[in-house]
Image 1 (cartoon, rainbow, N blue to C red):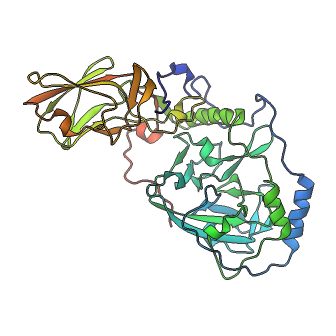
Image 2 (cartoon, rainbow, N blue to C red; image 1 turned 90 degrees about the vertical axis):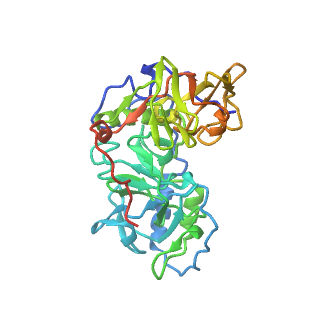
Image 3 (spheres, rainbow, N blue to C red; image 1 turned 45 degrees about the horizontal axis):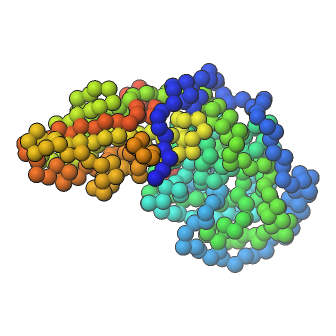
Length: 419
């Protein structure tokens, strides 16, 4: 039994709702607690980087393919442009020795590069994160940037820190991209540093055991030096944060920035709730949080359909990443002849499209995922038409509306990077 959101918070507690819109996300001047100190000595790290940059390269055995990807890895999606001495270049055009330009203005050669195409079917955790153009401010990034979920974004919060992209997903300017497959590129320097990807400061990749997952690009590639291995083992070039006040401050700032880019929160208590029965839409009669549908008994393919929202995207402090539709508190079926049928929320026939039961004792509810299946056996034996009565436990969560949706623009195709 999960601990889902219920009831909804007042409107003024929705993420960023009490913050004024800003044109960009400025560095945070104050935050609760002190920012963590860097885990390694900066001078020693720079010395090791310079040492490893000077070392002779040596051939390395071909990487061994794994059955599946590592639990967490940083990589760029094919098509991403990195800053080089010759200007922005797509990651698939790079090779060992290409000089990249760091966020600090240094020129550093690529020491190892590899790629791997993975299937995301049934594995949402492998889907890349899209950082929309200007999500962090004008030109940050300059155009949509796609990275692996754990790729570190370099942001200024009382000093520069690295935040995994997945920790800032908000359903607006940072979102998962539901691709069937994706090609990831792993780009290493001799030591960890900050690169510019589509103009956005991000981390370079580190060899923390992930090379064997990727196929090396080109004919030759360098073995990691002892200095580079020590650097990878002792820590990153910037402090890494995955939780705490920094994350919450950044998420609030991102919500403000999203509003300035045209995103808005929509609050509709029923979230557009309706039935589809054998391909036809059926609208409800409504009385507050109680809805009633008139359904022909011969209907077979029936779904309870609504808009959806993710608690973690709209409720401050929530880590609930489920996509939620409406929360059912009661479900009854009655044809007026054979007697009323009260369907228990934990009825085993309610499976596809329903999340596990929430709550305890008499206070229980069950969320849909926006397309919950109502099997025809629920009204088997009824005559003529049936009245399907649903009582909702609470209003639906607010949801973000994109500028294009607000303007009534129909998306004809999903965003996809060239592979």
